[in-house]
Length: 458
Image (cartoon, rainbow, N blue to C red; front, side):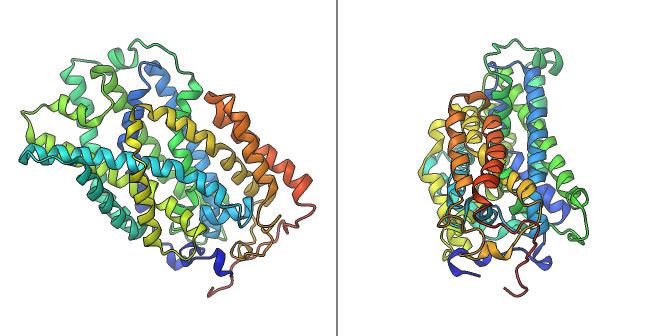
């Protein structure tokens, strides 16, 4: 192993290091999914898109995301590697910082935004009982609390979610039912068939919903590499991916659809996307206990999402770029950056940000899948991933096939913004395979079909 490309936290997980059970994994996904971002996006899709169309967009988005999660997650299950380490095979040892840097953009944005929402809830609770208000203080303290929780790893996050998820589900269902009752509305007649402007395309809506989860599709190996699965080497693709598929279906698809529908209902009935305002209007000041529980739960919703979805990925990316950092140091840096950029200043454009970020990640996702399934046929030289002068050196540490494909896809995607993810993803797959076979592999032997694991004890 080379010290300049290796950090102990980036090493492949061993069987004893895989500590996540099926329940832990499902709870982590539910914890990431039950958040205010989903609520707000569901609300901001209306009235630009008809509610029935939103339902179809939800179905299409989550089917696509689940497929990408399972496909990318296999390299974590089979070889125990992280997203940033696998990027060395695609982009080269030095080039791997490019997809890593791009991947951090949505992480930092959503960590800062959701910390702000949680801080708003805390400020509302404190001011309700004491009259004291200081949003900046609560942003800093709440951000620090989440960082501390994330430092202790996924197992600690899952234990937190075991408490938080039931509370979150109850509160969001209560908000949904109360909105319908308070407005004497029927979900079918008044929500699904509410009049709309229909100015958004279906592709735009799908990526507005799926955009945030494309980020986690890239980082799927970071979670699956810690799953307890017996006899990984002796199982085929479908058998070893059964647990992550079911866990993601329960934790992402079902929970995500619920949150989006609650947000959509809120937008139609009271014209609000901010859950703080929704709770205040729904329950009113004459129900302080209910308000307290709701605001506290909103805070938990941000906490459960941020630790696994928005702090862990950039932490691994920083460790890849700066191997001398510790996991704790990289987590702290990620949290600080997310707050310093103050993304809450763009809170009225969440759907647009989702579509934009997905366009940036499209070619990376395509290249990642093309490399693993088409070029390497799910057989890796894992040892070389941790050698600075191994087979993934390419041209001075950069893989020209990945670099050219990525930036070429960005240029094309700019001209088709609504369809940017689909176009850049396709370019990522096709462009990378063609350039690898025509330009790169004849010059840089990739030993296709040769599996080399990291020697025991390293």
